[in-house]
Image 1: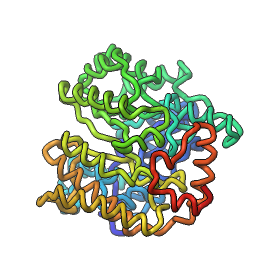
Image 2: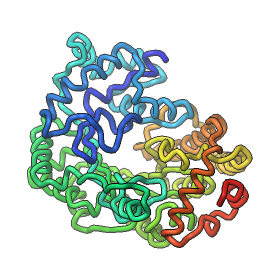
Image 3: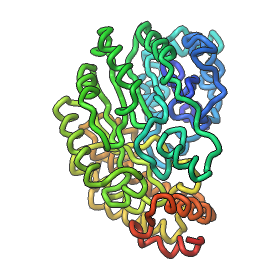
Image 4: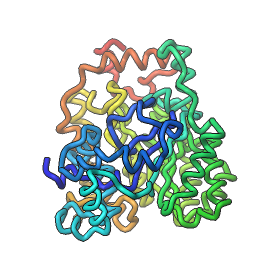
Length: 431
């Protein structure tokens, strides 16, 4: 890989606090763990860690050295998907089609030079945060983990799939939460806060942080991002969100088919669609930026074109953090080759029916409503490329079957009621 393929400006303005309260350098890093060994707010000063603790990472970026934790972004780019790295490059005015020239003209270029002379140290403060609020959640998605769903954690514990429950979320400690709010309030230039759960709308800390920023008269200068699972509506939180400069609304749905209820267990498709309409109407009224958030799995990729069609008709962009990596047995690449061909044909047919002449390999800003149709088609194409090129992992089918049989025994349902086309491959793997 050359410099233009490895460099990412994110470590100069972004950081993350995970469920345990530990710091991480990126919201997209593939080396992150649910309970990391990185220091947290009680072990080291936040700004000290950002400026000095991330220096080796910045230096590697400046020297053009690949970083192991960046692999998910590289995989996304390999398949024509807009990665987190590409999004961060856009924020600082760097265009991958004219990398050298746009890097030199970026307003951040002098800071990159200063950082190189200081061996990776920066004087910047975080401007862009991902804030993991913990696993407080009313859903138990089949592809999720106990660290991101309290409901799934309870089910896993009852079924013997885990021995102990996840540690308490950092934001349940009122002192930790107050300290973090103080850090945000004292930041010289806070631009964007992205919250994830669990389900953010029912997590008390989400409301507490929003309320604190509003009361400190900071909201009008800050953009907020969050994702909802389309099962709840909390008017008091909605009222707070309307106080902020901008809101990036993510709405999670896997397909416009009853299969969505099987995979996003705890939801009901009719209610999900009703909430989707309600949130979309609000976003349009408030001029928020809204997207459908998907995590295609070995199951839902069969009906993935339904999401693209819904989004295309309503001019909603479609985003996913990355191609699903864990749990391994839920990856779309577990599909046997003959089934992959069927999914490719379905997606390609949809793409051909929605041909966009202007589509190219250029990076499309997923926040730009003017190019939303191009973004949707480009995203659909990325899954075609993925299915065509990813190594065959159908050997994981027995693991998949063992897992869903365990879960179905608890949930009293069957994948075959939602996805009868999969019966031959599931039966052959022991279903």
